[in-house]
Amino acid sequence: MKVLLSGYYGYGNFGDELMRLSMEDFFKKYKIDYTIALSKSVSKDTISRFNIFELIGSIFDSDALVYGGGGLLQDITSSKSFLYYAATINIALIFKKPVILFGNSLGPVRKSYNRHILRSILRNKRVYLFTRDIVSFNYAKRLNSNTVLSCDPAVRFLKTVTEFPEKKFDLILIPRKAENIEKYIILKEYFQNIIVCPTQEGDLRTSLLVSKDLGAHLFDQPNDTEGVLRNILASKFIITERFHPALVGAYFGIPFISLENSKAERFFRKYTKSRKPFAKDLIGIEERILALKQEPLYLKEILDKEADESFKKLYSLLIKLKSFRS
Image 1 (cartoon, rainbow, N blue to C red):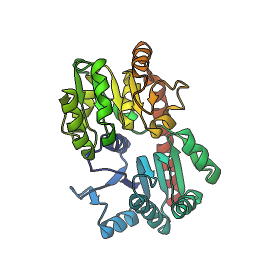
Image 2 (cartoon, rainbow, N blue to C red; image 1 turned 90 degrees about the vertical axis):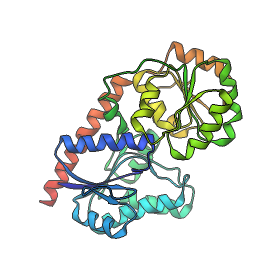
Image 3 (cartoon, rainbow, N blue to C red; image 1 turned 135 degrees about the vertical axis):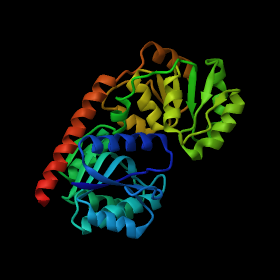
Image 4 (cartoon, rainbow, N blue to C red; image 1 turned 30 degrees about the vertical axis):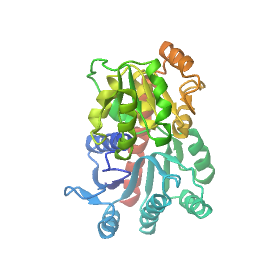
């Protein structure tokens, strides 16, 4: 069987690159032939996601289109990106190719026209959904019986980590919004050795300003996925405006606070009723820090089990789809 693997890959985004590494490891282990869509073609096994001829040709030559993780079908970040992913899915469906959304979250979708497109996609019986959060699962299940509750694909890669760096930093801070820059100064009261570590290229300028305000270290290579992971593992506490650093924290038992991230709250609702790791701002930060240091989320066992089951279901589905096409 041959699949086209796509996602928000090739931009150096920490979470998306972790998911890509996990998906590629899965395909290689089970000897599934795949082509990957990146921001630009870099080898014979890749295509440019923006080259319409390469994209259509690869979909036509593949047995299935697989979107490997992430919040792709939403229009909060950009309506253009939503329409791109929706169009790619619809091209596959026109060619009567099955589409697998593996480890995806759905929405929010604000525009009524985009919501109509999303519902149309989800109702198609050639679409198979592995949703990583309960909100997405409940929504998709009403429209499509081919829906299961799944893992975040990045867990498969985290499971391979066996070497851990020395804990050099009291805090790793992953900022995002420029309006939060001045608010972070309070962290100097609670942490001494701080590293600021953007996980996307677009967060670099904000991170530079925050690091100067705090007199903190700056890791200025967000495209270095292993380097970002190494810095997270070298830290005793995580405060993040991005989702996947929180997932890394929960997996390895590093206490974290996820700021203003509904994606994180939706995801972790499966595993905990505690709201301590989730905050809208830094009010009452001292109480949260103390509580989370004493009792951090440590979800490795349950996340590993969920990932094993999810990837087994994905493999079984691919085998079933291959038999249908034979």
